[in-house]
Image (cartoon, rainbow, N blue to C red; front, side):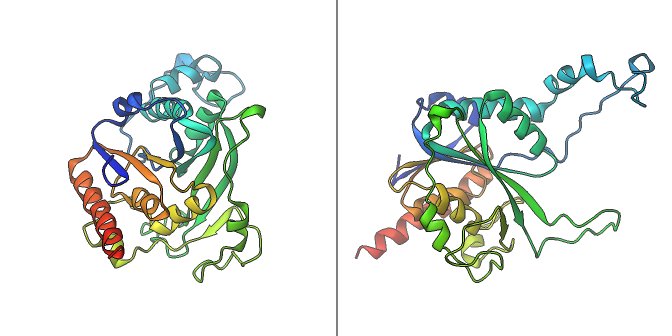
Amino acid sequence: MNNNYKLILGDVFEGLKDLQDDSCDLCIVDPPYGASTTKNWVYGADNKIKGFGGDWKLTSEAWDLLSQNDSFLSTYKWLKELKRIIKPTGSIWIHSTYHNSGFVNVCCQLLGLEIINEIAWYKRNSFPNLSGRRLTASHETILWVHKGGEKNRKYTFNYEETKSFSAPYDMLKEPGKQMRTVWDIPNNKSKDEMQFGSHPTQKPIRVAERILLISGTPNGTLLVPFAGSGTEMVAGLNYGMNVIGFEIDSEYYNLAKKRLENVVTNKANTLF
């Protein structure tokens, strides 16, 4: 851990094995969505099922299909590790879209992880659909999850902070009112967020800051399995948490490291 953060260049599935049980207070996961999968499934005439109107013999093939799907398998694998690593008082926040949200939900249920809330992040300035063949995608889903079970419902919820919170950009949140499960957060990033470069799926830091407002633990440990450009790690440092992150791509590892070092330098300068 260097200056309250540890960024590791390498495979997250190998790295998570080294983390101890119940060692992290919060986890924010922005995984690959699987939107560009090259998997092709072929079903022959022998697999028809009467009354279903198709060629899928679902009763015997459903699990086999899932067990061969890379997105499902990887989701199950990292969620299983996170259940072990996150404290009973902690939370796991998971970004998703329609490409992977079903897998995430099913894997949570298989592992006994309880979904506290499903958040719809509304992006009013989302990119338009250029083909004109479908509706413009204007939201993403974020799941707030904890370890599950009656005895484990000890997760951190900074209720009063969320109730008093307000932001000029969010037309749905009024100070003194409970926070809703729809967040109106524009998708644009500031110059500071982009000064060292960008990531194709980079989230605005305001999303991570809101998650920390809800579930953050000052001086606790935040885990970011897929660091990308480092946005969630930067937000964690600014909040006052120790941060651990993994990134397999050296280009984005270097980008995230520059952003993290910038935060550390700025904090040091404010002490003098």
